[in-house]
Image (cartoon, rainbow, N blue to C red; front, side):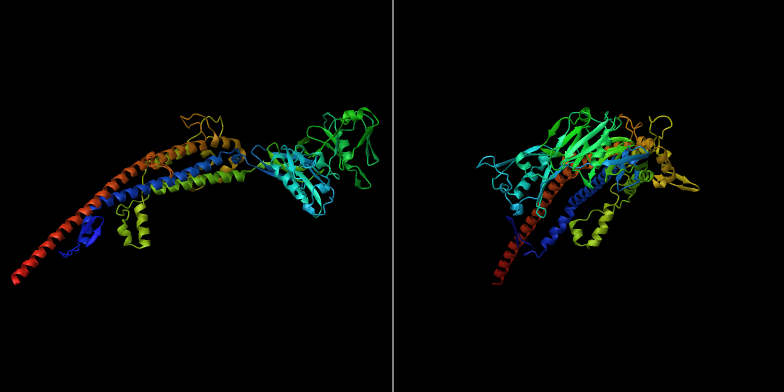
Length: 606
């Protein structure tokens, strides 16, 4: 006897029948429609998953096609430098083929300053008060302002703040100012540096912090509002005089002396092999500045009173900070200024490494091999895609191999299950019209000529040596059995790349803007539009992993099947309950009959 829920089941106690086995066999026959529906659902899910897998393959190929659309894919250049120690270069698609000359007159430098050796006995734990930086009034905080190329910030510190806390406070404001601080205990010096370089980089400080920087810090700029050029002539005969640390330096000038020549003489001037500590800078804005390393003022004079005016040095301007220096280069004889040592000229990316008087030759040539490999890589991806699609369209369907039931799985080994399901899943997309249509559209897009490219322009892949049939001498590659696979005549393609890279770029990437037809669109434009259409159709049919079942066709079918399965499962449960009730009734009657028979037998025997 067995009790299930509110139902008491008598399983063969009176009749001797194996009730459970009988009902199991009865239910097996009745469950046939349910089993068939489960198998149909499984096959629909397999088919849906196959479609989704192909949608990912189409999407990946579209991404590869979009990557190919870059101008640099078809117009790649190789660039060489005659002296990589001075300057290196790489080319963009816009780089002009030929030989170019460049000379690095000056490297770009960041704004940076440092203190002299500090009286910091406790290193980072030394208080600012002991260094002479105190609050304006007793009981207040120390207030410091700091600025850079990004902006300025106000910093407040406790009166007992240390060097370490000052460094942290300045560096914490770096995103707002562009200025970072470090302290080196071995050198016992504080360093400030800007994140950028060139004239745009700067460091400005309030007076209380400026007082720390007494050794190599705040230069005095001698600059008026005059804008100069390297080639400007001084237009006077006489001397330009600088008085530095009590020493007077004299520079002879004439009406033919240029600004560039005077700047060079000042920067190269030494006394006893030691530099003067004065630098001359003509920045990208054409402003001339004289910088004194230790912050002392400079005395300027000229034998001709108009000289300082002509140089724009007749007005003294003291500043509370420092700026960086622009890189100065000569490219094909033209002087240029850049705020970084990484810069671009005429489609060439340069990295200036060292200042020199040497003129470096930069060679630019078409990169045929790189362009060839990119086109070949795209063709290989296309061949791989259509081979995969064709294999599914031709895959054999084994109709005798239905999805396994739970009972069948229990009776089979894991390897047997794997082999069975491989055949059960085979041919899910055999001769599928959607995939077949996608192949036809892609083949047409690749083989049809592109209109609107002009007289004499390359108009089809075949003209590049790319086609579904390749004849080389007595060897023929490509037949109908290859089902659209593309072959490449490497010599012909490389020659086309060398001769007409711009035409190849147009052939692949042209977009005529007309969405009704693809005749005027380039190869890649056609391919991406075709795949967009196929992707949308598969999405509408098989959906995406995160889509609701009501949003795609197969999802609606699965939802309908799930409702039918639920209804059938309910019917099977009710039927099984009814069978058990019937057998329980039988057992009850038999039990009563056995009791009556036993009573009668007892009566006769007595």
